[in-house]
Image (cartoon, rainbow, N blue to C red; front, top):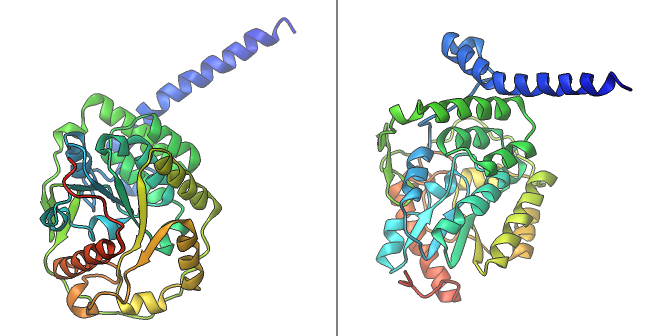
Length: 320
């Protein structure tokens, strides 16, 4: 027994030394080796979706009436400029492939800065089925790493998440990311103040056939969903679940038992499915199977505002 304590202390010391050294070695490997040799290190800084611009915008943004949250269907679907025309201040907290684990993080960490009266959450079956890894590394690379990030990583025990976290800690601590600002316009995408990403052009053309995706939520994602709803309601924030329009081609052929998903959403609170409620053409108003171009965004937002106003689900505008 006398020799056990020193042995355990040496093991602990070695473990702490290794944990501290790992991010440094990971960074050196990532810098020194071509990407093909580091497939387990993903750090999509300034990547698709303008998440970094959104987080920088959020840091200086005043409180708002409404926050939009969800996947790319959210940040490409809810345009704060249109809502401003109706008197509402808003911010879009969507992110690429955002699963409910990431929604939970953003609600806990960043929603208090915006202090909204209403959260409009974009929902469809895919985020409830996702493993959350793609969205996790996106947030790690483009949002300041904090204890909320670590908590998210603990819920997603995957090598890509942990390597991105270790690599990101070194990059953010050394200021390496600060030397790489994100352009507001990238390709056909333009970042709009308030978290929205505008795609002016683009017309969808179906290619190939669709494999029907399952609609049953993963337990991990459903737990995060319920945890997030509970947190918002405890803060006195109203929540509306909105299924944004997809192409008819995708909506009618892409999911198994969509009716069961809709029932789950309706049982969870105020829910509205906008598919079939807006006069949209697959070829004219979408640029992918699930993403609206700007012409489609304008039709969708106006129809949603009108629908929510008629139901009495919107707060009094101009409180901020």
